[in-house]
Length: 175
Image (tube, rainbow, N blue to C red; front, side, top):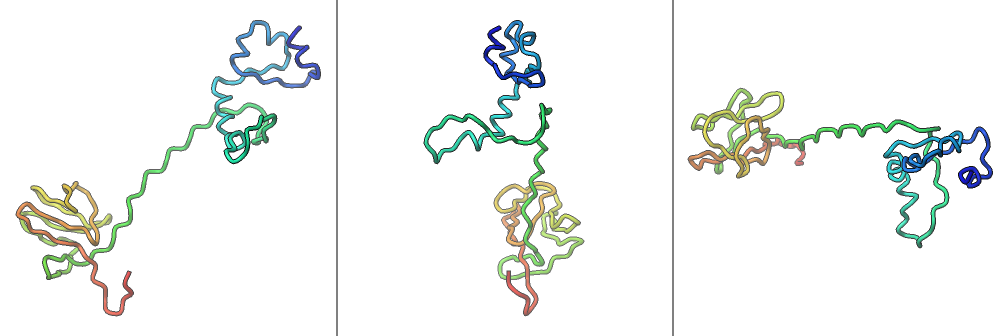
């Protein structure tokens, strides 16, 4: 048959792997013992895995006749990509005082009143606001649970504004 003539060096224990399209040819499996039809996306996966060997932009065009082995013997099940880790929020700068105008007052973890029913407090996650009405942080609406830190500006409806700052102890290194 034409299939066996196309592969003259084929021996009994040899494996032939073929694209799923080749599996559509009638009688091919009977003519080629050891024929293994790949999963539908196996060729695409192999191309993606060998991309560095196939695409070499710094070199002249050449035909690829062999590719390095990637390890493993035989077909493998596609492993799903791991879920990307949830992005971590950027670290929040320390805040020890509330600056209004030219006056700074120390923050109290159990709550520092801002007026209009708003209070700045600290929990295990960091500094937050609690109250009702409109408040802005850095010129954007405050989101419940939003963590505040040094450098953040708080503004209430009446126009009052504060900046969270860190006051360093005398002789402490500046960051």
